[in-house]
Each structure stands twice: as C-alpha cells, then as structure tokens.
Amino acid sequence: MQPFTIHEGLVVPLDRENVDTDLIIPKQFLKSIKKTGFGPNLFDELRYLDHGEPGVDNSKRPINPNFVLNQKRYAGASILLARKNFGCGSSREHAPWALTQYGFRSIIAPSFADIFFNNSFKNGLLPIVLSDANISKLFDVVQEKPGYKITIDLYKQKITTDDNFVIEFEIESFRKHCLLNGFDDISLTLQHSDQIKKFEAERLNSNPWLESI
Image (cartoon, rainbow, N blue to C red):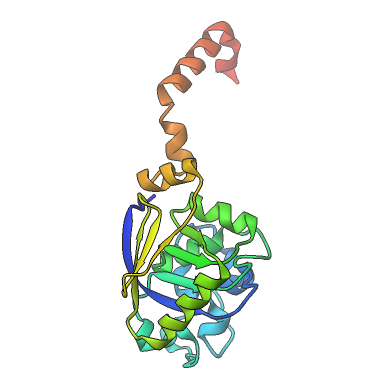
C-alpha cells in the first residue's frame, strides 16, 4: 500500500449528499475477481450518458460534460471534496479501490459511512472529517478559483490551502501509523512472520499428524 505522508493536490468538488457506493462504482462492475481496473468506471453513471458494462471501451462512450470529473479545470484532481454521509450503501471494498485507482489520495467531507470510512484506511485512501463550516468554505473557494490546490500533512494533521488558511483534522493514532508507513492488514500481519513461523513449527512438533492433513 502506498504510504501517505504529505500530499499536495488539485481539489474537485462533488456537491451532493449521501453519495452511496453503487454510485461510486456501480454493481455491474463488481463481477471482476481482480482487484484492479475499477478507476475508469468510477462514478460511471455520472461520467457517461449511456449504461456502462465491464469490458466496454470507455473512450467510445458519450461523456457527460456537466459532471465535474469531465471538466478540464479538474483534470488530474487527487483530492475529492464531498458532502455528508459519503460512501453510504453497501459495504463493497471496490468503492475505495475505484477512487484510489482513479488517482484520489484523500476524500474530505463532514461525515462518512462507517464501513466505507474503515475500508478507505485499509486501501491507502485518507478520509478527512471537517466541520460543515469548513466544508462550505472549501466548496466556495474551489468553485471560485480554477486550479485550487491544498496540501495535506498527515504528520501534523493539518490542511493548508492555496491562500494559507490552515485547518487541523483528527485521526486515530493507529490508522495514522498505518497510513504513514503504508501498512495494510497483510503487511501488518507479516511484521509478525517470525512469531507465526515459530508457532506453526511448535504446533506441528506437538501434533505431527497435522502434516498429513
């Protein structure tokens, strides 16, 4: 998992509440057994004017010019600004996969659905909760100023805007540790590989019949 330390990125505003995981990555794209390739279909129902299906060449599909991700001023955005209850709906982990594979490193919103919030950390995506007042201020300035960037410093737990406005945010210490070091559940487990091997060896020695199973 890619570590998250300090990230400067272009901000794109998604001005709608209760964005659910089926809107983030529609259900028909969950047929794939791979963990990659979801980025091109992120917000598929909003980005395109037709119905998307796995395996379709997206370059030949009609684009929705009114959707923010299709507007040139937001090309290359890596920070998504959203409204309350982002990531509600089903528990599909494909949602943070699609967001990270599109290129997002952080989502900023006043609130998140619990399962999406947890899944984001496990996939290197930093969800930041800010007050409604700060969210509204960011929406105003992002929409007013093309090319608006912010810097997220996870070490200091601070957001610094283009106009030097500083916003502090909270994050649980263990999640912060994992993001800073790029640890997912597997890499955390592998840190204890010596102890695991020792346990397995001792278990096999005391129960040699297990080897034949």
